Image 1 (cartoon, one colour):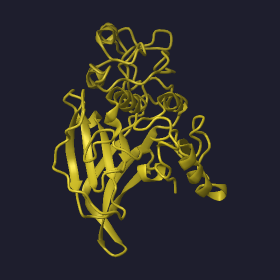
Image 2 (tube, one colour):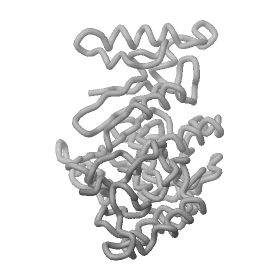
Image 3 (cartoon, one colour):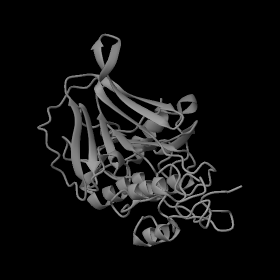
Image 4 (cartoon, helix red, strand yellow):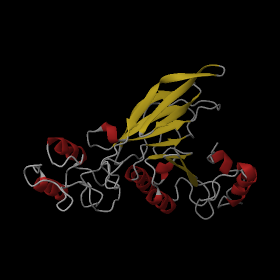
Length: 323
């Protein structure tokens, strides 16, 4: 069990007496110590409340949003964590929603910092953020405006473990720019949890709701997806985040990349074949040519960049290793 400090945990001492949250953290540390201590790799002053760990091919980040930076996260530390991660699956959780649902107080109190945080999850190949704070189940996706909901990030508010429930009016009326929150599923007066199952490169998230004492069943909300693993040689260029068209590794797939793809389109076994000495930009499946299949793959990525599903950082190099 990896707990996350919430607002009630962080206000054990009056802010006027403990403005940095140090005393309330001391109380937290007194409980979560010894065999119950959390990973100690958080930033200075946040050990045991902010942390990360790896389990199999999954990288998990738990974020404290109180202490010296209420309603925010330690972005510099998080960026370093994402940069050093080598696992395909990333799960991030904190107490407060990134986008307002019920409570006025959440990460959109500092919208610029929130936007940087949200974009960093996308750039690191994360698909979702888990939180609590608002006592109900609320699943939303943040529409990035590119017309493809499959690449949108999701927010799961799962505060359904025993506290009294709140009533939501149905509007995401916080500071949401540049995204458009879209409701996927909402439930009140229902206890439950999210089950996340990882099978290789496939992930399934299922809302499990309480139907009787001790009985939890699928409750009608499920999100499943699979990470792309192009190319087969595992050279790290564009893998996982499915941004193969970013040939120059500048975090977008734009006209420069389109020009490079156009130069190589049509190469085949009989016309200027791809080989190790003359690598093809655009042979995404490494089958020795650049054809319609590759064009369809490039089209999927074209236009990514900035706030529109940015490409992750990479190091330019050879895409395919030909025999």
